[in-house]
Image 1 (spheres, rainbow, N blue to C red):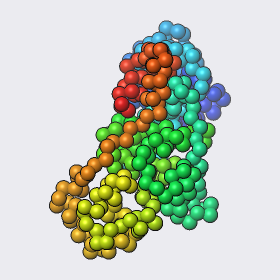
Image 2: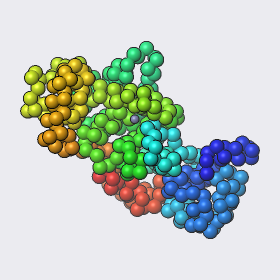
Image 3: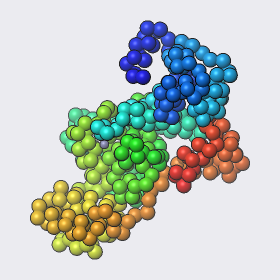
Image 4: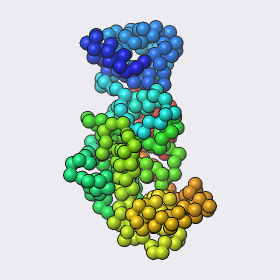
Length: 354
Ligand SMILES: [Zn+2]
């Protein structure tokens, strides 16, 4: 079902969906189900489901039970739904191979996760500012410097990027993102704080670059990522992780591997990214850059990061949960509060980020 059709039905009926009907659509999308598939799973007619999602019909308790069971949530998710939750728009470079339904599914996941976290620990407020490239800033690099300064990082190495973002009110969670073939997804709606879903199995260096890149999208952009915006987010991310001014000051001449390893480790970037950055900053000319790339490929260091960093792990949500458990709360109670099954609650908020 396409959104355009749906919107037409809503306009015609002049009916706003209730929190329960909006939740039905969002949960269904997050489970990757069509209305027809949900109809088959519940024995409720697709036409009925469509009317419920559009807000023109309500269901009896018995049928809400069936729907809740099929969508693997407690029925109270529907009976006590109080906030209208719609799938979120996401910053994502569309690949031709990525099905639209997958993008919608993750958008629904984002919205549900945001609501669940709000139920669990309250909605975070962010200290992060949006910036506009036409707002007196000439380059993404300058905005990266401004954001560093906003976040109190100055020009120093950021050893714990996840912690820095979490302190600024950005929620970071590890997530299975294989179906989108992306390393991360970020969303920052007008009325909420940014949320970043991070692929769980990437190297720390890659995760850090991805987070810095997504942060760039979050502060710079507000729509589908174009090629130009991808370049801007990359430029932002590179400068955010390692300011050019610092690289120029610390770059060893001539560059030997034993001097580059501590440098890449201190700044938390991959060796390939460091080499690339040195080239972009005119510290390595074309032939030296080519030479280094051959060294990295033939030694296997392109694929396997030398002297790797320990993985970064989001902690904010997990720490809050552990604090509540320590005070005597049970997993069941916390899952109940978030309107989730205990299994799903543990798997999303505890196991992935442990
Ligand atoms: Zn991007």
